[in-house]
Image (cartoon, rainbow, N blue to C red; front, side, top):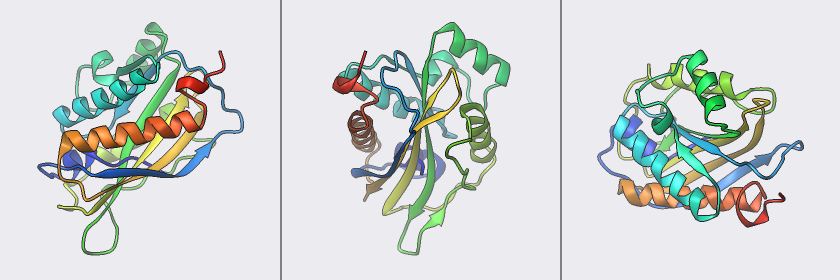
Length: 207
């Protein structure tokens, strides 16, 4: 399970992308808890402009359902992989209790699905910090991938910072992407709605 959209524009070197997004392959931890108070959004992408636009779009969607969220670039302005010490210290300083991490995993062209970067396996037992650093080491060292995908797939993982445990994971597919901004809005809305259905954010919060 992983993420797909504006990150496709970044990692696949596509000038623009957008389309309708559907979230499937959803998993929620049996130890899940509602009521995240402050969530940071990480979009792992080579192009800094795409990263920032993607994160802003997701933050805006979360804000609409009453979730306090912040884009990672506002906490960590530099590009590339963060040092573990800085990552730990900054999340603690800003009292971040949840991290939503998005990673592009595949794109479908006229040929069968092809992987854009080496896939990082996730799931119960793979904590936030290990997952984050594994993604970065692959994404920032990968090639440009394929061009003009008809479908792009993204894995989105929500982690609890205190324990580092995965609380929710969903695989999204965006069909016929063609414009970056529309793609981001489509993805952000779809993932936020999926998190609401899982009772992790929004009106279903149990304070």
